[in-house]
Each structure stands twice: as C-alpha cells, then as structure tokens.
Image (tube, rainbow, N blue to C red; front, side):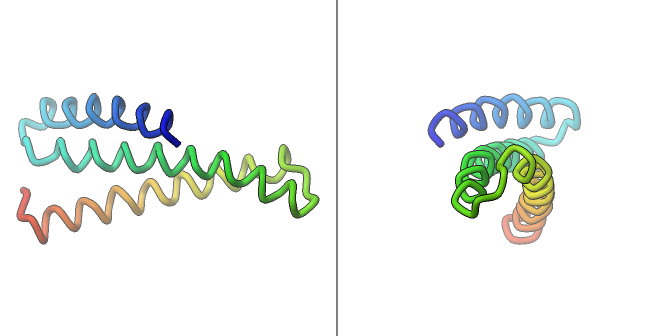
Length: 95
C-alpha cells in the first residue's frame, strides 16, 4: 500500500499540475491530483486483495481477478473523480 500511495502521490502531483497548467484554472489541479492519488491507491489494494480472496474461495485467481480488478478499478476511479469534483465544486466553491 505504501508503494502504491507513493506512486499515486507522484502521478497525482504530475496530473494535477498538468491539469492546472493546461486549463489555466488552478482549481482543477487539486481535483485531478487527489482523484489520481486515490484511484491508484485503490487499484493497487484491489489488485492485491482479489487474488487472495479468490485463492481462499478455491477459484483460479489468474482467470477471475483480472477482469474483476479492471472493472472495479475503473468504476471506482470514475466515482472518485466525479464525487471529488462535485464535492470540491459545490462545497468548497472551486470553479
């Protein structure tokens, strides 16, 4: 989890800086950066946990975990991004 958090932090900083520079709006940087950090950390935890769960259920983890991890990671990444955007725009007032 620590290495995933570090990778998420680096990617989040780079993506947040890029978003802020490309759009010219500094408010987009934290949204993209934090969403990227959370999405990468979540995907790493799912990629670690799912094979363990499938092994304990006596299901081949190589066949079952790939599609499930990809689907869960992508779905939660979108939920994280849109939820964080909604929160920061409506509650904090970033525009």
